[in-house]
Length: 212
Image (tube, rainbow, N blue to C red; front, top):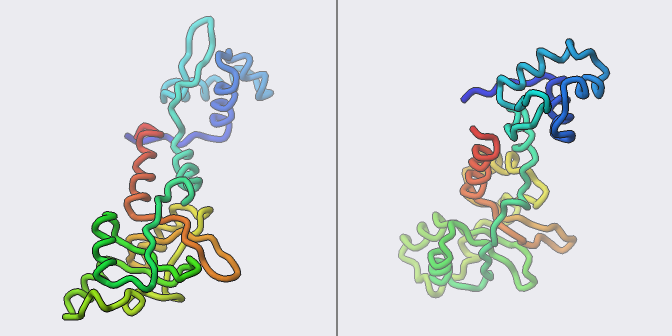
């Protein structure tokens, strides 16, 4: 379904109607400081497009349909903090074997590694663990800090970052998940994770919100 783009005055009319349901055409024109005849085409467009309902001798009602440009605004407004999930964290000392058990029991694609003070020191992906398990190593004796990705090669994000920016990072780095961190003078604390699945679900929710 193709959405039409509304002009500034039509957007203003929608806001007036939403805040003053029901409202007559004369009342709308008074609030805009324009003649009734001037806004008549705008009201006709908004009604035909389904943004407004017009009831004789009552006035205009907002239908609940959202204009197309608000989709972009919604995407820009989507923040990591609203869609992040719980991180799965392990310590540097656990074995690769235990990490493999962790990643499958928790059903995640990435583990975040922390030191004794709970600061982020590394990231482990399924690819890292698979590569190591195929190398003939003793997985019970090898600690994960030997194979993990370390700083400064760890890509991370913050709670206030937008999902669009995070999605770009994932595509650029070809990774499936990022740790969500709080930054301290001593290091980075892991407070969440954001994945491709989180982002996909968030963007798909726009379809329901905007009746796409």
